[in-house]
Length: 120
Image (cartoon, rainbow, N blue to C red; front, top):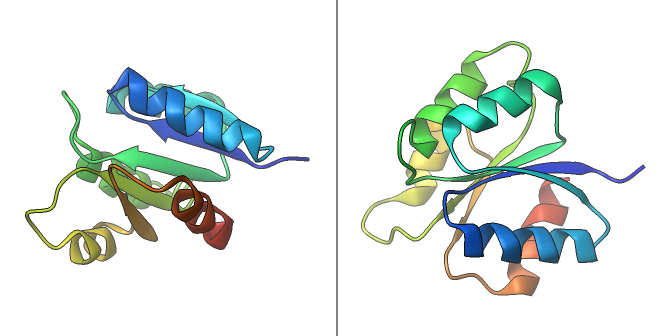
């Protein structure tokens, strides 16, 4: 059975690219365009991995990750942050909020898949 990955990003083009890359590698995908939608999906289904954009309207990605890690039903799901930010210590932020890794946008497709496979 293939692993299921939840992708949370408010940019439709990024969602399309990520879903395309993951499906080509045999992963099942579900997607959300906001933190609120992500929590709704997490209430229905538990993925094996969450790829989470940091900057989103409403609940931003770091708050989504903090809430996931504080929830006993969700905190075992690994989270990889996805960000275009270059201004601060993303590795430090990822560690502080409980994410296992991060990927900077724009990303190299093979580097992206390697990070996913390392976590899964």
